Image (cartoon, rainbow, N blue to C red; front, side, top):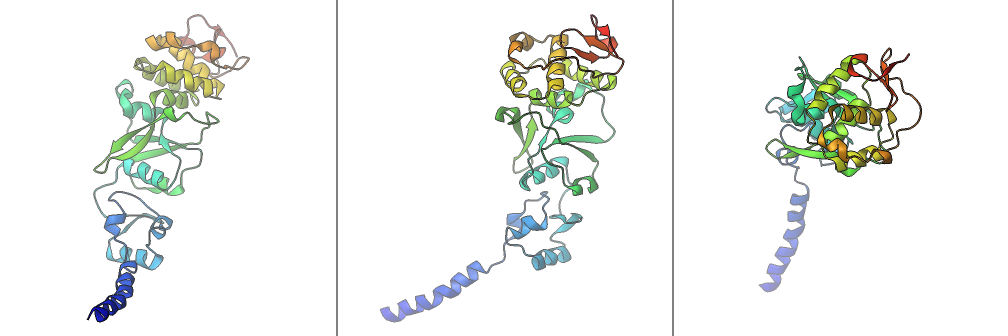
Amino acid sequence: MIIMHSMAMHDALPANKKRTTGRRPSLADTLPEGQLVNRSWLKSRGFDRPLVDYYLRTGALQAVTRGVYRRPGPPLKWEHVVYSLQELDYDIHVGGRSALELQGLAHYVAKQRRFRIDLYSPVKLPSWVSKLDLPYQFVGHHLKLFEAMPEEALTTTPFGHWDWPIRYATWELAFLELLAKTESPAEFDYADKLFEGASVMRPWLIQKLLEACSNVKAKRLFLWFSRRHNHLWFAKLETRKIDLGRGKRMIVRGGALDTEYLITVPRDMIDDGEPIF
């Protein structure tokens, strides 16, 4: 009896193993509601092309745009898109003006008709992002400010039921990102309003970022706006340790030259400058 029992167990094991390993993956357990994925992501988790096509036919999956899918659910928010890009291994974060507005400075600027999300990445955004039918404008920025970005420059904010971590630029980094592309008087005015409310930035992080930053224009503008608003943290910066390059830089054509930082700025925003260009 003992021998027969052992043989029965031996015969049953392969069948049990085969049933376990051959079981189809659960779409609901694998793909969170709201996340956008492509076929490569699905294939890497056991969903081959015929299975994906089956889910599309039955409505378990829906195509958001060509080659990008989601499970049916509530309307998509911009956070779903950003988190999905992160999960698809894009080195990306919300930065610049969007990071500043979404993290507390929105009341200093006029509201936009279409909600704008500035995304910073060393690589281009996939083309499908611009094809999404959403009330958001995703603006991609391919900007390199550092050889190696200090890890403290980024933060995360939880989103949704699962507390998905959405990467954001800190205020300190976001201002550098914004100022790297500030050129027109209107952009100066916009940055000026944001700087007005930036009284609680961390001088140690500003110092670290300014020392590591390779963009001379962004650094000079950051210090110019800092001096202009003279928040308490400005006095704690060791500006002599910051490489500001050499020579004059024309930022605003027809503006006035700031004699300390050697940059041209709108004439109505400077008291002791001299006309240039």
